[in-house]
Length: 153
Ligand SMILES: [Zn+2]
Image (cartoon, rainbow, N blue to C red; front, side, top):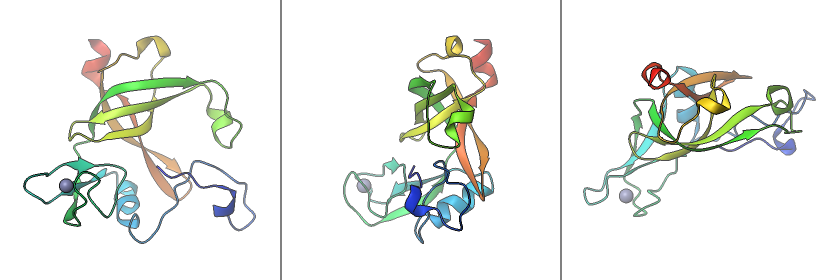
């Protein structure tokens, strides 16, 4: 996900680095996220048909422009993670420690995100996750938490 840099902040409000930069194309994605829906882009070429994330206007695998929005199930597995103990960029500092993660959506795409509500010792490669949406200014940003069945396992 694109993180807003200092030049993206306007209006003299406190600069924060967790907000996306939204353009006309990604507006669809962020509008859906605000409604609690995670969107993917899927290639319409029969020989390809792969889904990708973060959204692009071209299929990153075959460069076709025949790419459509699709709602993801919101289920993923944990691929890798890093517990961040220090981040001086606001508002991350007040969240530390947090779990920066790369997750594999069931539809295939790999996605940079965060895992909430898990202690470090509970994290396992391949554990089941589900998307939740965190308020971030006017946006809701997709992050993940352990699925109930994964915690018990
Ligand atoms: Zn393709």
